[in-house]
Image 1 (spheres, rainbow, N blue to C red):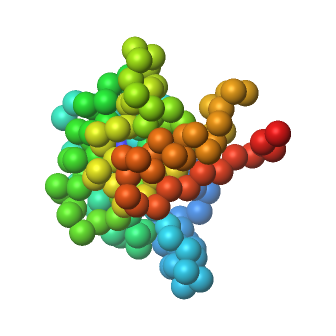
Image 2: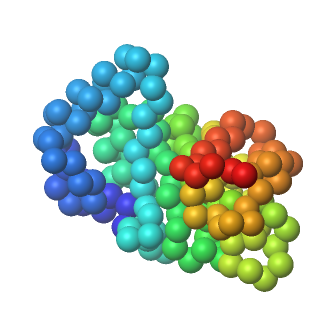
Length: 169
């Protein structure tokens, strides 16, 4: 669950696994921001799914207290549910309209749906985001990064980032 138990000034119960104190992490974020680095707090993930009635405020408050620029929605649960991804993005945007939001999106999330669990899953939710990061690291051997980028460009006007640890040949 994304940051269900945040208590001001403490990382306990947040799901974040830093080996340093809250203040040390906050200072490190400040140093990164001083160098022009955008720092996003990641909420969600495969081991921290979003429940139906999740409250966005604990993660927003943690983001503010750490001094992050915004929240990256790491949505990996219920992968085939386009409406659920859109709902999560909308809830965050409505709770904090001036916040900065991003998401790691499926490599095929902007393709036309065809019944597979990942194709088209991000089409409607990206409208609530400021930038996206295409998940290329586990896209498979037949992944075409240009095709994926172009599919997202058709539905999303913000910045699109694409990275990978492997060489494309």
